[in-house]
Image 1 (cartoon, rainbow, N blue to C red):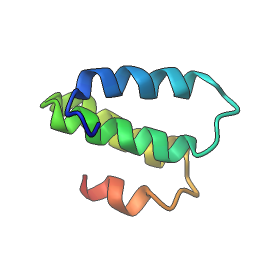
Image 2: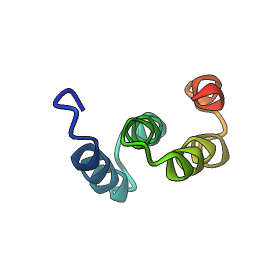
Image 3: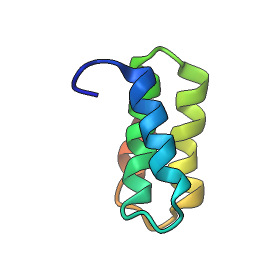
Image 4: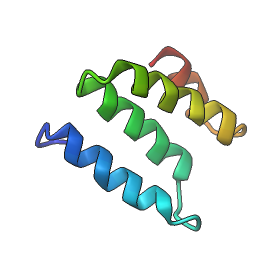
Length: 68
């Protein structure tokens, strides 16, 4: 995301999320939401933020995801 190529960041994050054993999947989901926000894909970003809470109920990233 440092290169500001948010579409590429979303694709890379989605690829990582495909691995069900990947560490920090909640954080990856949160990063995906941020990248979508920066890419101005707001509806998708909202869904990604909501997914942090619904799929990762114990995540430390929920408070940040709630306020995107």
